Image 1 (cartoon, one colour):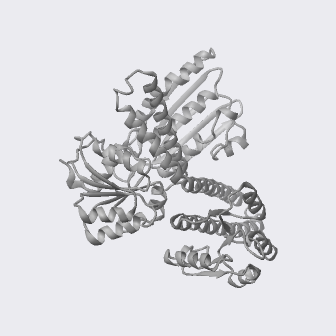
Image 2: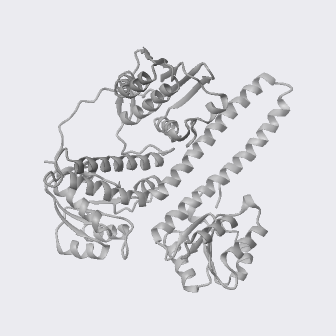
Image 3: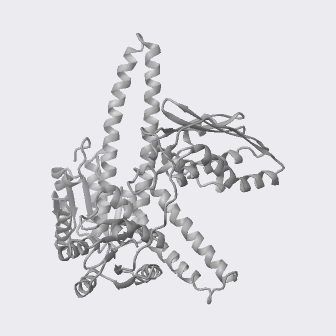
Length: 548
């Protein structure tokens, strides 16, 4: 796999499993998924020799084999391979004990896949691992080129000292941005890997919670049980947002994101008003006073997601308030400069050391101990980057801090949006397919609120039987299902009825959309957990003629 032009499909994959049936089956599955360069070894004693011959980009290694175990094979590979050149190694095992995992990780394992393997999980994990390997190789090439450039500039230092120092400073700044972005990309990839299971669980919590709250006869308003349910649903929503935000690290902007004209001056005013009760109460409790100072210039509208930009400002305001425990001044200013709108948030608090200033945008970095998650500023940085902007931080210990956000001015002048009439959907006949009966029940209950007639199926084969027997306006299906997955189901339905709208409701939605792995037969991919408003929006997108 060429790191300068990475293509997962030309990756060389070595499969080592002493069970011929397992090795051949896995190779066949990968070849059908677009990985034609697969080699299998069923005799572990020859695995190291085959490794040297093939020079694979990825090794899939069974843990328990005879006469050599997977650990023994990995140790032999380690002996003949330099650490930085060794490809990722994924263990295939039905032994998920802590001892087995600890031993494999100590030997240098990259990941685990539990037997029997799930084909969708295998393909997605291999894609993620190969992406990380390509990025690592690119970083190696970048570092090598950087070292050569520094050597060259060092020789020129005697003749052009002043100009060279400026160039090196710019280079260092660029390098720090690349490192920061790659760290955040890695965290986003990790979060995407666990989002599926988390979102399935959150779908049940939010779905059943909404259903119970909608029954005032069983749980009357104001009752202790009703309040507890509201707290459960609220916590579920917060956790769903946390999963989404973790995936949002360095996530490219999506074409489905709701971007609109934003007046930053108004947004600052709104955010100050919304957050004031919390930080004012905290300051007053400590006998302190925080004064607000505003210096707004006349600036053009920018394109953005108001909720996300409001989150950035909220994080900056709360951080500034925490930095002024004895009170102080919190200043907001805006101006137009070099075709960019600048928004500066300054405080007169404790300030930061240079080391803290350089690290404060990194995920999980915090100076608040157990009281801080270390995600606020990192998420804010990701949001600003997705808006095409940047952040500059100035701070000194005892002199306060200033965070300046730079957002691009659109090429054409924007106009404020006016609220339009709310669209409604006529009753539809919908087929809901998910291998979790509970999720089928929840989605059906949501759709029933809009008077849709819903039939459910718990696997692809059952869904095809019902689809052939009836007339459906819409199909909503999960992706990872036994017997026939969602992609295969969508293909089968489209062959029978090419115009049938199909929505895929899955915990892998963001990963599918970002990697472009959506099946052609699927019209839209929607992320779990989805609520009624999300389903309405998705239905309107794939069926605009369904409005009434």
